[in-house]
Amino acid sequence: RLAAVAGGAAVALLLIAGTTFGLGRLGSEEGGTGVVRRGDLALAVDVSGTLTSSNSVQLGPPQVPMLWNYKISFMAPEGSKAQPGMPVLGFDTSELERELVQKVAERDSAATEIDKRRIDLERTLRDLELQLAEARARLRRAELKVDVPESLASAKELEQARIDRDVAAAEVSSLERRLELERRAAAAELGALVEKRDSAATRVSEMQQYLQMMRIAAPRAGTVIYVTDWRGEKLKVGDQVWQARKVLEIPDLTHMEAEGQVAESDAGRLAVGQPVTLRLDAHPDHQYRGRIAKIAKTVKRREQGKPEKLVDVTIALAETDEERMRPGMRFQGSIVVEQAEDVLLAPAEAVASTPEGPVALRRTLLGSERVVVEVGRSDGERVEILSGLEAGDRLVLAGQDEAAAAAGGVEGAS
Image 1 (cartoon, rainbow, N blue to C red):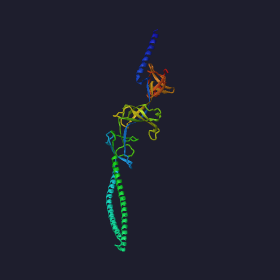
Image 2: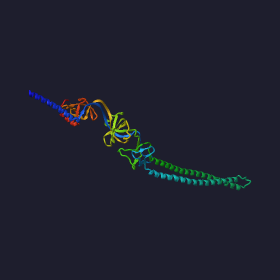
Image 3: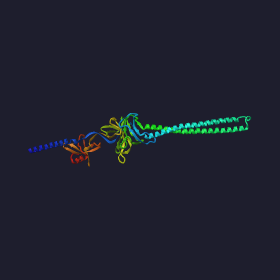
Image 4: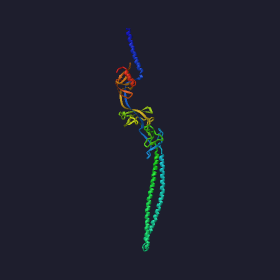
Protein backbone atom coordinates (compact mmCIF):
# COMPACT_ATOMS: atom_id res chain seq x y z
CA ARG A 1 0.00 0.00 0.00
CA LEU A 2 2.80 2.36 0.86
CA ALA A 3 4.39 1.50 -2.48
CA ALA A 4 1.18 2.36 -4.33
CA VAL A 5 0.94 5.71 -2.58
CA ALA A 6 4.57 6.39 -3.36
CA GLY A 7 4.00 5.44 -6.99
CA GLY A 8 1.00 7.76 -7.31
CA ALA A 9 2.97 10.62 -5.82
CA ALA A 10 5.74 10.02 -8.31
CA VAL A 11 3.30 10.16 -11.23
CA ALA A 12 1.83 13.39 -9.90
CA LEU A 13 5.29 14.86 -9.54
CA LEU A 14 6.10 13.89 -13.12
CA LEU A 15 2.91 15.52 -14.41
CA ILE A 16 3.63 18.68 -12.48
CA ALA A 17 7.18 18.66 -13.72
CA GLY A 18 6.05 18.12 -17.30
CA THR A 19 3.57 20.95 -17.06
CA THR A 20 6.16 23.17 -15.49
CA PHE A 21 8.64 22.19 -18.23
CA GLY A 22 6.14 23.03 -20.99
CA LEU A 23 5.29 26.38 -19.42
CA GLY A 24 8.92 27.13 -18.91
CA ARG A 25 9.70 26.26 -22.55
CA LEU A 26 6.83 28.41 -23.80
CA GLY A 27 8.05 31.29 -21.73
CA SER A 28 11.61 30.89 -22.89
CA GLU A 29 10.53 30.89 -26.56
CA GLU A 30 8.14 33.84 -26.20
CA GLY A 31 10.30 35.91 -28.56
CA GLY A 32 9.78 33.28 -31.31
CA THR A 33 6.02 33.13 -31.04
CA GLY A 34 3.40 34.57 -33.36
CA VAL A 35 -0.31 34.86 -32.62
CA VAL A 36 -3.13 34.10 -35.06
CA ARG A 37 -5.51 37.08 -35.17
CA ARG A 38 -8.39 38.42 -37.20
CA GLY A 39 -7.72 41.58 -39.19
CA ASP A 40 -7.61 43.28 -42.55
CA LEU A 41 -5.18 42.17 -45.24
CA ALA A 42 -3.98 44.67 -47.85
CA LEU A 43 -2.40 43.15 -50.95
CA ALA A 44 0.03 45.51 -52.64
CA VAL A 45 2.49 45.74 -55.53
CA ASP A 46 5.77 47.63 -55.48
CA VAL A 47 6.15 50.98 -57.19
CA SER A 48 9.19 53.23 -57.53
CA GLY A 49 9.97 56.43 -59.38
CA THR A 50 10.56 60.14 -58.94
CA LEU A 51 8.66 63.19 -57.76
CA THR A 52 7.61 65.88 -60.18
CA SER A 53 5.61 69.08 -60.01
CA SER A 54 2.15 69.07 -61.54
CA ASN A 55 2.73 72.71 -62.46
CA SER A 56 6.32 73.23 -63.55
CA VAL A 57 8.05 75.46 -66.10
CA GLN A 58 11.05 73.91 -67.86
CA LEU A 59 13.64 76.16 -69.49
CA GLY A 60 16.19 75.44 -72.20
CA PRO A 61 17.86 77.05 -75.23
CA PRO A 62 15.78 79.66 -77.13
CA GLN A 63 14.44 79.05 -80.62
CA VAL A 64 17.08 80.89 -82.66
CA PRO A 65 16.91 80.12 -86.44
CA MET A 66 19.96 78.38 -87.89
CA LEU A 67 21.40 77.83 -84.41
CA TRP A 68 21.15 74.26 -83.12
CA ASN A 69 23.99 73.84 -80.64
CA TYR A 70 24.26 76.06 -77.57
CA LYS A 71 26.90 76.47 -74.89
CA ILE A 72 25.70 77.16 -71.34
CA SER A 73 27.33 80.28 -69.93
CA PHE A 74 25.22 80.89 -66.83
CA MET A 75 22.96 78.90 -64.50
CA ALA A 76 21.32 80.14 -61.34
CA PRO A 77 22.41 78.01 -58.35
CA GLU A 78 20.23 74.96 -57.85
CA GLY A 79 17.88 75.42 -54.94
CA SER A 80 17.97 79.22 -55.19
CA LYS A 81 14.74 81.19 -55.12
CA ALA A 82 13.77 82.78 -58.42
CA GLN A 83 11.51 85.78 -58.88
CA PRO A 84 9.65 86.68 -62.09
CA GLY A 85 12.01 88.47 -64.49
CA MET A 86 15.20 87.38 -62.71
CA PRO A 87 17.86 85.84 -65.03
CA VAL A 88 18.24 82.11 -64.30
CA LEU A 89 19.87 80.71 -67.46
CA GLY A 90 22.24 82.05 -70.13
CA PHE A 91 23.99 80.79 -73.27
CA ASP A 92 27.16 81.85 -75.07
CA THR A 93 26.52 84.76 -77.48
CA SER A 94 29.92 85.07 -79.22
CA GLU A 95 28.66 83.71 -82.56
CA LEU A 96 25.64 86.01 -82.56
CA GLU A 97 27.80 88.98 -81.58
CA ARG A 98 30.14 88.33 -84.52
CA GLU A 99 27.23 88.24 -86.93
CA LEU A 100 25.77 91.36 -85.31
CA VAL A 101 29.02 93.28 -85.90
CA GLN A 102 29.03 92.10 -89.53
CA LYS A 103 25.42 93.12 -90.16
CA VAL A 104 25.89 96.49 -88.48
CA ALA A 105 28.83 97.13 -90.81
CA GLU A 106 26.73 96.08 -93.83
CA ARG A 107 23.87 98.33 -92.75
CA ASP A 108 26.10 101.36 -92.17
CA SER A 109 28.04 100.77 -95.41
CA ALA A 110 24.79 100.53 -97.39
CA ALA A 111 23.48 103.71 -95.75
CA THR A 112 26.70 105.57 -96.65
CA GLU A 113 26.57 104.27 -100.22
CA ILE A 114 22.95 105.38 -100.54
CA ASP A 115 23.83 108.94 -99.51
CA LYS A 116 26.80 109.06 -101.90
CA ARG A 117 24.90 107.58 -104.87
CA ARG A 118 21.89 109.79 -104.23
CA ILE A 119 24.12 112.89 -104.43
CA ASP A 120 25.82 111.64 -107.63
CA LEU A 121 22.54 110.67 -109.26
CA GLU A 122 20.90 113.94 -108.34
CA ARG A 123 23.83 115.81 -109.92
CA THR A 124 23.60 113.71 -113.10
CA LEU A 125 19.86 114.25 -113.34
CA ARG A 126 20.20 117.99 -112.79
CA ASP A 127 22.77 118.19 -115.61
CA LEU A 128 20.46 116.29 -117.96
CA GLU A 129 17.48 118.42 -116.96
CA LEU A 130 19.55 121.55 -117.65
CA GLN A 131 20.59 120.19 -121.08
CA LEU A 132 16.98 119.34 -121.82
CA ALA A 133 15.84 122.82 -120.85
CA GLU A 134 18.44 124.38 -123.16
CA ALA A 135 17.47 122.02 -126.01
CA ARG A 136 13.80 122.94 -125.60
CA ALA A 137 14.73 126.61 -125.67
CA ARG A 138 16.61 126.09 -128.92
CA LEU A 139 13.64 124.20 -130.30
CA ARG A 140 11.29 127.07 -129.48
CA ARG A 141 13.62 129.60 -131.18
CA ALA A 142 13.89 127.38 -134.25
CA GLU A 143 10.11 127.03 -134.39
CA LEU A 144 9.77 130.82 -134.23
CA LYS A 145 12.08 131.19 -137.22
CA VAL A 146 10.08 128.61 -139.17
CA ASP A 147 6.88 130.51 -138.45
CA VAL A 148 8.25 133.75 -140.09
CA PRO A 149 6.20 134.69 -143.20
CA GLU A 150 7.86 133.86 -146.52
CA SER A 151 7.68 137.53 -147.48
CA LEU A 152 10.00 138.41 -144.62
CA ALA A 153 12.61 135.64 -145.12
CA SER A 154 14.24 134.04 -148.06
CA ALA A 155 13.62 130.42 -149.00
CA LYS A 156 17.15 129.54 -147.98
CA GLU A 157 16.67 131.02 -144.50
CA LEU A 158 13.41 129.17 -144.03
CA GLU A 159 14.97 125.89 -145.11
CA GLN A 160 17.78 126.39 -142.62
CA ALA A 161 15.26 127.23 -139.91
CA ARG A 162 13.38 124.00 -140.60
CA ILE A 163 16.63 122.04 -140.40
CA ASP A 164 17.52 123.73 -137.08
CA ARG A 165 14.04 122.98 -135.77
CA ASP A 166 14.24 119.29 -136.64
CA VAL A 167 17.69 118.99 -135.08
CA ALA A 168 16.49 120.74 -131.91
CA ALA A 169 13.41 118.49 -131.76
CA ALA A 170 15.56 115.38 -132.13
CA GLU A 171 17.87 116.62 -129.40
CA VAL A 172 14.94 117.27 -127.06
CA SER A 173 13.53 113.82 -127.73
CA SER A 174 16.90 112.18 -127.13
CA LEU A 175 17.47 114.07 -123.91
CA GLU A 176 13.96 113.21 -122.66
CA ARG A 177 14.55 109.49 -123.28
CA ARG A 178 17.98 109.68 -121.67
CA LEU A 179 16.59 111.54 -118.66
CA GLU A 180 13.81 108.95 -118.21
CA LEU A 181 16.32 106.10 -118.45
CA GLU A 182 18.61 107.81 -115.94
CA ARG A 183 15.72 108.30 -113.55
CA ARG A 184 14.71 104.62 -113.81
CA ALA A 185 18.30 103.47 -113.39
CA ALA A 186 18.76 105.80 -110.41
CA ALA A 187 15.56 104.52 -108.81
CA ALA A 188 16.61 100.88 -109.34
CA GLU A 189 20.10 101.48 -108.02
CA LEU A 190 18.89 103.37 -104.98
CA GLY A 191 16.19 100.75 -104.42
CA ALA A 192 18.78 97.97 -104.40
CA LEU A 193 20.95 99.90 -101.96
CA VAL A 194 17.96 100.67 -99.73
CA GLU A 195 16.93 97.00 -99.80
CA LYS A 196 20.46 95.97 -98.85
CA ARG A 197 20.50 98.49 -96.01
CA ASP A 198 17.04 97.52 -94.75
CA SER A 199 17.89 93.82 -94.94
CA ALA A 200 21.01 94.38 -92.89
CA ALA A 201 19.05 96.60 -90.48
CA THR A 202 16.42 93.90 -90.08
CA ARG A 203 19.11 91.34 -89.38
CA VAL A 204 20.71 93.70 -86.85
CA SER A 205 17.36 94.00 -85.09
CA GLU A 206 16.97 90.19 -85.12
CA MET A 207 20.47 89.69 -83.78
CA GLN A 208 19.79 92.13 -80.95
CA GLN A 209 16.57 90.29 -80.18
CA TYR A 210 18.33 86.90 -80.27
CA LEU A 211 21.04 88.21 -77.96
CA GLN A 212 18.36 89.17 -75.45
CA MET A 213 16.76 85.72 -75.83
CA MET A 214 20.05 84.04 -74.89
CA ARG A 215 19.60 85.44 -71.39
CA ILE A 216 16.52 83.66 -70.02
CA ALA A 217 14.53 85.09 -67.14
CA ALA A 218 12.27 83.23 -64.73
CA PRO A 219 8.65 83.44 -65.92
CA ARG A 220 7.40 82.75 -62.39
CA ALA A 221 8.50 82.62 -58.79
CA GLY A 222 9.84 79.31 -57.51
CA THR A 223 12.86 77.19 -56.70
CA VAL A 224 15.48 76.49 -59.37
CA ILE A 225 15.90 72.76 -60.05
CA TYR A 226 18.38 71.26 -62.54
CA VAL A 227 16.81 68.77 -64.95
CA THR A 228 18.45 65.32 -65.11
CA ASP A 229 18.84 63.25 -68.27
CA TRP A 230 18.03 59.56 -68.69
CA ARG A 231 21.28 58.69 -66.88
CA GLY A 232 20.39 60.90 -63.92
CA GLU A 233 23.08 63.48 -64.82
CA LYS A 234 22.66 67.26 -64.67
CA LEU A 235 24.10 69.88 -66.99
CA LYS A 236 26.61 72.52 -65.89
CA VAL A 237 28.14 75.75 -67.16
CA GLY A 238 30.29 75.07 -70.24
CA ASP A 239 28.24 72.09 -71.48
CA GLN A 240 26.95 72.00 -75.06
CA VAL A 241 23.23 71.35 -75.49
CA TRP A 242 20.86 70.91 -78.41
CA GLN A 243 17.97 73.26 -79.02
CA ALA A 244 15.27 70.97 -77.62
CA ARG A 245 17.15 70.05 -74.41
CA LYS A 246 15.69 71.24 -71.10
CA VAL A 247 18.29 72.52 -68.67
CA LEU A 248 16.41 73.60 -65.55
CA GLU A 249 12.91 73.96 -64.26
CA ILE A 250 11.04 76.16 -61.84
CA PRO A 251 8.35 73.98 -60.28
CA ASP A 252 5.38 74.88 -58.16
CA LEU A 253 6.39 73.10 -54.95
CA THR A 254 2.89 73.44 -53.55
CA HIS A 255 1.52 70.95 -56.10
CA MET A 256 3.68 67.83 -56.36
CA GLU A 257 2.92 64.42 -57.83
CA ALA A 258 4.79 61.16 -58.29
CA GLU A 259 5.70 59.46 -61.55
CA GLY A 260 6.26 55.76 -60.84
CA GLN A 261 6.87 52.45 -62.58
CA VAL A 262 5.28 49.08 -61.85
CA ALA A 263 6.40 45.68 -63.16
CA GLU A 264 4.45 44.58 -66.21
CA SER A 265 3.41 41.38 -64.41
CA ASP A 266 1.52 43.50 -61.83
CA ALA A 267 0.01 45.98 -64.29
CA GLY A 268 -3.18 43.96 -64.76
CA ARG A 269 -4.04 44.44 -61.08
CA LEU A 270 -3.83 48.25 -61.22
CA ALA A 271 -6.79 50.62 -61.36
CA VAL A 272 -7.20 54.37 -61.14
CA GLY A 273 -8.03 55.44 -57.58
CA GLN A 274 -6.11 52.68 -55.77
CA PRO A 275 -4.37 53.93 -52.59
CA VAL A 276 -0.60 54.34 -52.57
CA THR A 277 1.92 54.77 -49.75
CA LEU A 278 5.48 55.87 -50.47
CA ARG A 279 8.70 56.97 -48.81
CA LEU A 280 11.37 59.23 -50.25
CA ASP A 281 14.87 57.80 -50.48
CA ALA A 282 16.16 61.07 -49.02
CA HIS A 283 13.66 61.01 -46.12
CA PRO A 284 12.78 57.34 -45.44
CA ASP A 285 11.30 58.08 -42.00
CA HIS A 286 8.35 59.96 -43.48
CA GLN A 287 5.47 58.17 -45.19
CA TYR A 288 3.21 59.87 -47.72
CA ARG A 289 -0.11 58.79 -49.17
CA GLY A 290 -1.79 59.21 -52.52
CA ARG A 291 -3.87 57.51 -55.17
CA ILE A 292 -3.28 56.36 -58.75
CA ALA A 293 -4.38 59.16 -61.09
CA LYS A 294 -3.27 57.71 -64.43
CA ILE A 295 -1.99 54.41 -65.85
CA ALA A 296 0.04 54.39 -69.07
CA LYS A 297 -1.32 52.35 -71.96
CA THR A 298 2.12 51.30 -73.18
CA VAL A 299 4.90 49.15 -71.72
CA LYS A 300 8.58 50.11 -71.72
CA ARG A 301 11.86 48.45 -70.78
CA ARG A 302 13.63 49.49 -67.59
CA GLU A 303 16.97 49.65 -69.39
CA GLN A 304 18.13 49.02 -72.93
CA GLY A 305 19.03 45.38 -73.44
CA LYS A 306 17.31 44.14 -70.25
CA PRO A 307 14.16 42.03 -70.44
CA GLU A 308 12.32 43.61 -67.50
CA LYS A 309 9.34 45.68 -68.63
CA LEU A 310 7.53 48.42 -66.74
CA VAL A 311 4.29 50.36 -66.84
CA ASP A 312 4.21 54.06 -65.91
CA VAL A 313 1.72 55.34 -63.35
CA THR A 314 0.97 58.88 -62.18
CA ILE A 315 0.25 59.22 -58.47
CA ALA A 316 -1.71 62.16 -57.06
CA LEU A 317 -0.37 62.90 -53.58
CA ALA A 318 -2.76 63.59 -50.72
CA GLU A 319 -0.49 66.37 -49.50
CA THR A 320 2.68 68.17 -50.53
CA ASP A 321 5.59 68.53 -48.10
CA GLU A 322 7.26 71.73 -49.28
CA GLU A 323 10.12 71.31 -46.80
CA ARG A 324 11.19 67.85 -47.99
CA MET A 325 9.79 67.28 -51.47
CA ARG A 326 11.73 68.32 -54.55
CA PRO A 327 11.28 67.32 -58.22
CA GLY A 328 13.56 64.45 -59.19
CA MET A 329 13.65 62.84 -55.74
CA ARG A 330 13.47 59.04 -55.86
CA PHE A 331 10.79 57.16 -53.91
CA GLN A 332 9.83 53.59 -53.08
CA GLY A 333 6.24 52.63 -52.33
CA SER A 334 3.38 50.19 -52.60
CA ILE A 335 -0.01 50.25 -54.30
CA VAL A 336 -2.88 48.48 -52.55
CA VAL A 337 -4.52 46.41 -55.29
CA GLU A 338 -6.82 44.28 -53.08
CA GLN A 339 -8.28 44.65 -49.57
CA ALA A 340 -9.51 41.65 -47.55
CA GLU A 341 -11.42 42.61 -44.38
CA ASP A 342 -11.79 40.67 -41.14
CA VAL A 343 -9.88 37.53 -42.15
CA LEU A 344 -7.84 35.11 -40.04
CA LEU A 345 -4.14 36.01 -40.31
CA ALA A 346 -0.93 34.33 -39.22
CA PRO A 347 2.70 35.45 -39.54
CA ALA A 348 4.05 34.25 -42.88
CA GLU A 349 7.25 32.96 -41.26
CA ALA A 350 5.17 30.64 -39.03
CA VAL A 351 3.84 28.64 -42.01
CA ALA A 352 6.15 26.22 -43.83
CA SER A 353 5.71 24.55 -47.19
CA THR A 354 5.91 20.74 -47.09
CA PRO A 355 5.13 17.99 -49.61
CA GLU A 356 1.74 17.49 -47.97
CA GLY A 357 0.95 21.20 -47.94
CA PRO A 358 1.41 24.23 -45.63
CA VAL A 359 2.22 23.30 -42.02
CA ALA A 360 2.46 25.33 -38.79
CA LEU A 361 3.77 24.53 -35.30
CA ARG A 362 1.21 25.46 -32.68
CA ARG A 363 2.31 26.14 -29.12
CA THR A 364 0.81 23.99 -26.37
CA LEU A 365 1.40 23.73 -22.64
CA LEU A 366 3.50 20.64 -23.26
CA GLY A 367 5.47 22.00 -26.24
CA SER A 368 4.47 22.28 -29.91
CA GLU A 369 2.16 20.35 -32.19
CA ARG A 370 2.21 20.03 -35.94
CA VAL A 371 -0.87 21.42 -37.76
CA VAL A 372 -1.63 21.15 -41.48
CA VAL A 373 -3.31 24.39 -42.56
CA GLU A 374 -5.04 25.77 -45.64
CA VAL A 375 -3.78 29.20 -46.65
CA GLY A 376 -5.09 31.92 -48.94
CA ARG A 377 -3.68 35.31 -49.83
CA SER A 378 -0.50 36.83 -48.44
CA ASP A 379 1.10 40.27 -48.27
CA GLY A 380 4.57 38.84 -47.66
CA GLU A 381 4.45 39.34 -43.89
CA ARG A 382 1.10 37.78 -43.07
CA VAL A 383 -0.83 34.93 -44.63
CA GLU A 384 -4.58 34.30 -44.69
CA ILE A 385 -5.61 31.11 -42.82
CA LEU A 386 -8.63 29.39 -44.36
CA SER A 387 -8.65 26.33 -42.04
CA GLY A 388 -6.57 24.49 -39.45
CA LEU A 389 -6.06 27.34 -36.95
CA GLU A 390 -8.16 29.63 -34.79
CA ALA A 391 -7.82 33.17 -33.54
CA GLY A 392 -5.55 33.24 -30.50
CA ASP A 393 -3.41 30.24 -31.51
CA ARG A 394 0.28 30.81 -30.79
CA LEU A 395 2.69 29.63 -33.47
CA VAL A 396 6.42 29.00 -33.61
CA LEU A 397 8.16 31.61 -35.75
CA ALA A 398 10.91 30.38 -38.03
CA GLY A 399 12.08 30.53 -41.61
CA GLN A 400 10.37 28.27 -44.14
CA ASP A 401 13.16 25.67 -44.08
CA GLU A 402 13.49 25.60 -40.28
CA ALA A 403 9.74 25.45 -39.73
CA ALA A 404 9.36 22.63 -42.29
CA ALA A 405 12.13 20.61 -40.64
CA ALA A 406 10.64 21.13 -37.19
CA ALA A 407 7.13 20.34 -38.40
CA GLY A 408 8.31 17.09 -39.89
CA GLY A 409 9.93 16.01 -36.63
CA VAL A 410 7.21 16.94 -34.13
CA GLU A 411 4.31 14.65 -33.45
CA GLY A 412 1.04 16.29 -32.54
CA ALA A 413 -2.58 16.80 -33.43
CA SER A 414 -3.47 17.58 -37.02
